[in-house]
Image (cartoon, rainbow, N blue to C red):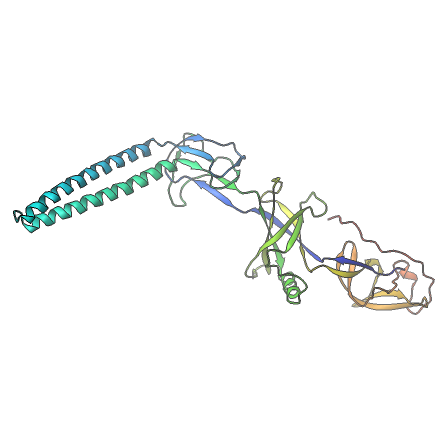
Length: 349
């Protein structure tokens, strides 16, 4: 026999989920042209701003030179319109020129000024096109393979029809998505309402995780998001945790096992499952009183923790429970108890 084990614990719920990149970018060209250079190795780490591809810039440089020439022409027209307006104003002041001619000179200056602004806008657009011939990494992360080889004509543009060149995924930190049942979600919400734990929507809730080949829970992170509705088809709700990934071990698409706290730390009573007897729908523990007489007690068991069973109610820390030889024990029978101990099992998950 032994007294129940008392220990401060946190109840955990475990779920299977999958990693996903925080940022995922499809790299596409914004201008069309022939691909002339590739500046990365497939699968390498790239930094934001690194040069990835070069599209032949010569047609766009020629267009830019043409726009600059048009600007010079428009500026010359403005200079001429200013001179003619000053001359017309002087003649008009002396009443040597009709008002309609003066008004025409004013209009000519405005048209020439508008042409200058139009040429400047065309230059800005042409400069952007030249800049877009050098495609750089928009984020830091791991790049995929190049989808187009040097020499191919690339179709660019601002729409989604532009050809895909490659993709980049961020690595550190990394998201972990998992689905919990409606019952589990409701249990979390009830525990939060009773003050037994922090809300799962609070980003300060710590979680831990392991991969398929790992023991224990070596990766620590925190919950960052819970979906705003339950999936009506599956009866589940999606949650997301964030984990640091400085050594880049965790990769988008990998599966893992996460544990989420189901309570705040509290002092619990733990007993082995072997000490629990089932009597129809009731769970019973056999105890020994001070007179060495067997007394049965109805308990309400909780989840398993470190190889032992949490007892919600029905048992006190001072009770002496029978942990071995249950087959020979009968309620109200006198026994000769031998002391024993209850020990937790090391985690193997």
